[in-house]
Image 1 (tube, rainbow, N blue to C red):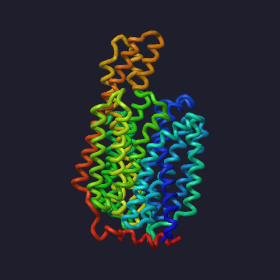
Image 2 (tube, one colour):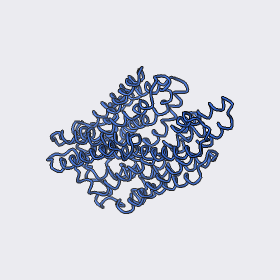
Image 3 (cartoon, rainbow, N blue to C red):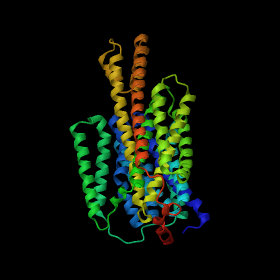
Image 4 (cartoon, rainbow, N blue to C red):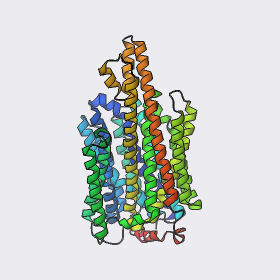
Length: 524
């Protein structure tokens, strides 16, 4: 076992690794408008700058988690950080959108190797439930804060340097974290030799990759289009094949019987719901701040600080409270706070709403997010044996990614549809068709049309277009918030019905499933 005095250093190294990967989730988004100007990227190419990373990340999560259990979690962590940092550095030198998209895809490989290893190593170092709860609370706080801080870091870099700086900076940071991991993180892997489940690896990657790709493309194709239906059907077939394979395999990469344990499956649903609402929230509030409130990217990020702080507080406090009063109570309360936030926003959002009210709303949301995701993650990791910590962590990470991808796709689709229909009904009849088509693309495009008309001396029409776009945006945002609130409320009801309050009594103080960790970590 690692010496007690070394545990803070182990924790710091693992939290920094998680921070770097999560920071990139939102860091790149603020650079997208600049990439249009500097690299001549089309809207489709901009989408793939973001989605290439998410797609590869999702497809390889389960495979990477399983491989880390077999071959070593520390090596997987350091190798992933090396791939991630090197690909990011190379991406900064890109001169075409295709080069940048390729670099982003390789970054996704590195992220998939790194992220599951951070959590599995934590749970193998901190083996008592109280220690595990605190470390996972800090891990959740770090991940949530990084997502919220991404726009601030990106906005600062863009304000002072070129777009390439966003990619350059992750290279040396990754190297620094590798050095910390090499010095302080212990070796850890499944001590029992077993065969590689190659069919399971391939089927899991195919299922996750196809599902995430289908979700990404569904808003443009149409959720009921032939391509979307075929994608979802193909994902279901691959998932069924994966489950059948794992049930029959003598040494499966994932013991699917784990899903019979409600500490694992119900908690996974809670994580999925919480990240559905988180990424949906960021998608909506970023547009509100930048387009309606006209904040710069850096200012928009700074205005998100209440979320970052409250997610961090909620994650740390939530895992400790879950040990005392039960996971069911805390996770349910967290999801209820998320639902409250969305219904509150839907009821009073307006361009002139005081930021002090918005800040309070964001604190409510952030606390709800922290109280949900970190305790649910602690429940998931408490349900898996220490020798399966890598693949257990990968399942947790997959639910986060799937929930977030669905949140952006579903809420984005609802918003876009309602924005377009309301705008069409309220635009001035005298507006030329070409300008009306441009305005329907986004609220930012509509405001640009308004500015063009004002510059031509058509002030009354410009004001009408601006008012129509603002009204359409508010309408789409409000209904999107209602949908997110309903999803969060449904998640709270599911947590009440299915999530156990506490682990079985014999697992409460020390998780015997974690006992192999002592031998595991001693194999240095």
